[in-house]
Picture (spheres, rainbow, N blue to C red):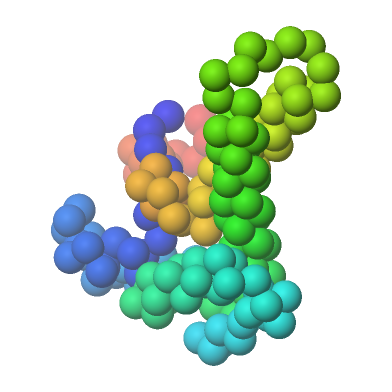
Length: 167
């Protein structure tokens, strides 16, 4: 089946490594859907969370260079930043609880239950982050998606060319 293709803007930023022709580039530009503008307004709930806001600035800086992300994607970027912040808090709580119980033999009880819950929370947040990174083209594998396939050329019928029709 092959790899999914990259968005044309990302492909061109990398220097056109596949040597696409001007016609192919134009066809792919026309096929991509554009929604919104290049103005990214940070939502207040992200600005109020220091870790989320820090991640927001980092992600937006990446997107300023490319043309395939617009203001229509602000909601998804904001959710990604908030989940990232929640992930960091969960990891920190887990470390704190592990440090508090260091050297103490753990027996079934509320401390072990809390460690298991925190571990599950960290894993869920990490899974959500990975899925969002795919959608936001923030990981290397996700950057090779969402480009239309080449148009198929119609099959050549030599009999039809000579005027015989559907014989």
